[in-house]
Length: 243
Image (cartoon, rainbow, N blue to C red; front, side, top):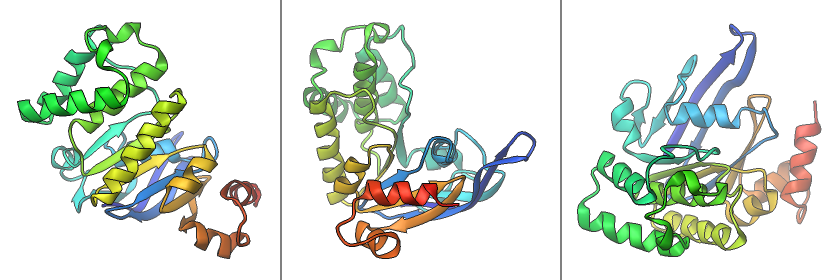
């Protein structure tokens, strides 16, 4: 479970609020889509949730653990896939996966099984001995996804995870999201692809200018801001256009 409680983050000496009193809960066993236009505060919110940034106000809890007060313990409850898959370019892929496994203390046998399983799913087995620097953006994204999954996190947090992925890999990640939610784990991801969010998510949250303007199911969104049968894209565009 993920909880954001009255979280605020400002830049330019407090003159610009990137996130403004944001509160929401993402439950166990659900796929939650975090939506908003560019500059709405999605990535800033995710960076606070994962401990990369500190909030100016409020708190963020992962499985009831405050990432402000107990950052190391909280960080063991999740895996994070950023929107920019750049890291450790001199390492081979297998060396990077070994490193992540060691940080999260994944037992050796489980590590090997998970690496094999997820590399097969994403078509990366033949690339394990290659250096990350030689990878395309899409291959780096697949490697980040694999690294996050071999830790078997309770909370899987992803920022625009499907950017740069081929259709087969995008299908694979959606299937894995469904499997993890069905097993009682939490999946939280941001996306600009409304069709994916509409078909995949149990609930969505829409943020605009740092404020949450909606949270709920597709049916609730249609009832409150649209009409039965109206697409998420149409309602989203209407919401972000309103003053």
